[in-house]
Figure 1 (cartoon, rainbow, N blue to C red):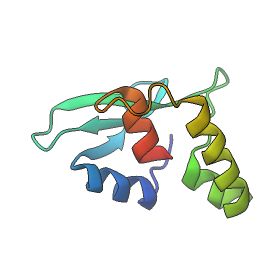
Figure 2 (figure 1 turned 30 degrees about the vertical axis):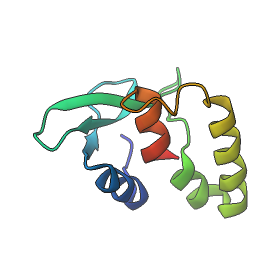
Figure 3 (figure 1 turned 180 degrees about the vertical axis):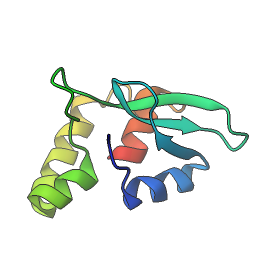
Figure 4 (figure 1 turned 60 degrees about the vertical axis):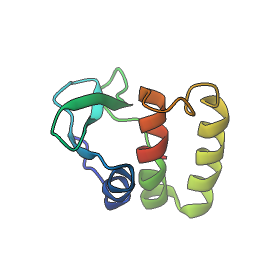
Length: 97
């Protein structure tokens, strides 16, 4: 099971949403609005069941320098969709990266 980091909780709080570990087997976190209604689920899971790393996970496992590089590449790769407010990509970008 994915362990949500303090970074992600803090980012979610800034957006006015709450997050919990996902009940879906192929996602990391579920995102809820202030009324407790589920908005979406984000964060990828590989075919082998392990989780794709996100910014705070990279910091923990490989250091800040590597994490910053991966963050930059993530933002470039998802540039078209991550700016669409309310989209899955938006929440993944804002909370996980």
